[in-house]
Length: 284
Image (cartoon, rainbow, N blue to C red; front, side, top):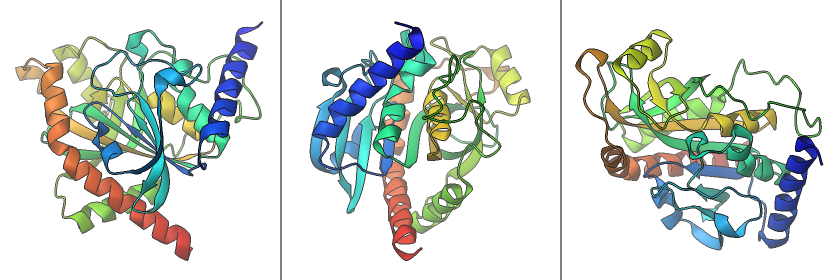
């Protein structure tokens, strides 16, 4: 069996498994990152599936990622929540990392709201801000689209002139105002392989490249979502801001604590975004 056919079989097996078990197919997927799994507590749950019970789903090895697929309703809106994600530094390929998004897209999901925790590079940022991603730099050295293309899943050369949906960005900005959140910014997100954190020289170089924040996740999922025709909104919690000339140690526990502190604001923002999308869908 070729590598392509093996991957197709894995995806199709997973699609069939979930199609038989999901109470309905929500059009909206929310993927929660480091320290940001609490939104799952607000959902009116109809189904919880641990990743370990879903065939061919990777298994998260990071303690801050809970590892559940949750289907239910947030403020009346049908959603699928991916409570935790996978990373290339865990040993997975980009294709494996993005498999859950590929599966949900094939099931009919049309919109992805993705969150992560990131380190700030823009000196005007402050820790505790929420950055709406307007563009990204893929520095993983890998792409989930590498290898033979499955034409039924998306084009060989997908256009990325607008990777993040401008309408969703505007809705997010308006929702931040509605929620009274004054630390919401826009910027460019850079994804590095990890798990080692940035050196002062790398921090300086990333900023020169135009990055406003840096992390180790999200880009494989975003690439697959766009390849599948999904609309994407990315939200990064800025856990810290480092000056390459006065670098401070970056400790994972501090990143998680910072993400946890901002989580209530992020939850309010996401709920308001969902309400706005739902109203626009109902009236448009």
